[in-house]
Image (cartoon, rainbow, N blue to C red; front, side, top):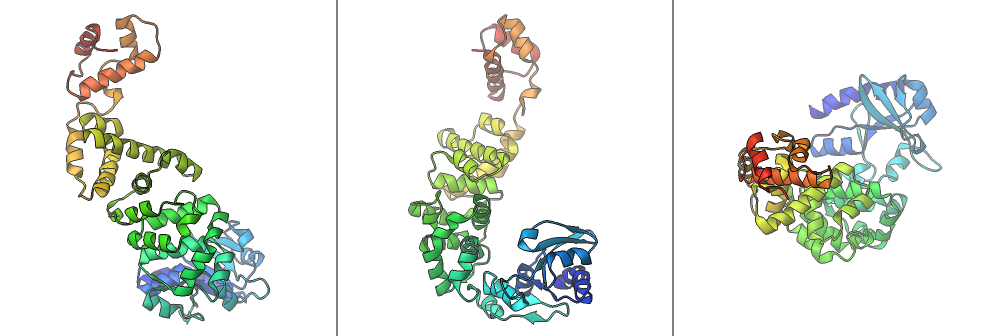
Length: 385
């Protein structure tokens, strides 16, 4: 039923290509996941048509990935990647599948739902084995990102690595350094978030692939430590990065994330979680700590701390502290900078920001009531620095 619905949506694409004299098949992850009986969303189609021919067959296309032979076809509001058969000399379905990464991804399905499996991928699916198509050495040379992708399938699916594929990763590991950081980092993030990340990280170490990523090089013991954590209890990528970077004892985690070209928002969240983790180590959860980062980030940090401490996260305790705060944001203060300047009778300057901070701290710590007159009286008596 799951496949039937997805197939019906892609069938008009296949039918149109076939009616115009071209071959067309569904390939890759959709076929693999259908055979595994797990949900899938994206459907990739391969065809004997060239890019220009694909564009001439369909009215609504987008020139995304043309240099790789891919055209985005939009049909009934849904987008499909349609790619010309790959291959240097011959361009056939067999050659296309021959140059895919692993046998479990080198399976095609026709418009009549016939399975085409020239490399015995269905057998490997049943055995839960990751095996490169034909020559592992060649497949990894064609696209070195596949080195990390093999580890990712272990993390996401708990598959076993076939021996020649394992050995090829060991000998070709250095090739991962030729991959754009954005691509390799995105793949590594998926490894961290897999349900079986503990198995994947151990394999990452055993294959010595870790020695070829600059941020994991010579971090064998730390990686083993990460593999022992219950990372599955985390929810956001910021939490995963925070736990990972703390375990790896990175002295400049923010700088590393910027090198890896992560988004400014992610960098900011990871910085906050790590800083709060270290503050928690000194003081435990305090009202001021929860106030300073807000409920959402406090819950993220609590999950990360719980994983690092091998305990369950106590989010209810965090929520209780937050909801007991007398203020949750500086904008709620009953005075502003102008009030402070007028009362203290000093020229504006950085001191005003510090004064407002002193007021915040006093109110959050329930040493002062958030009332205009009481705050002004407190300032007049020398409450601000």
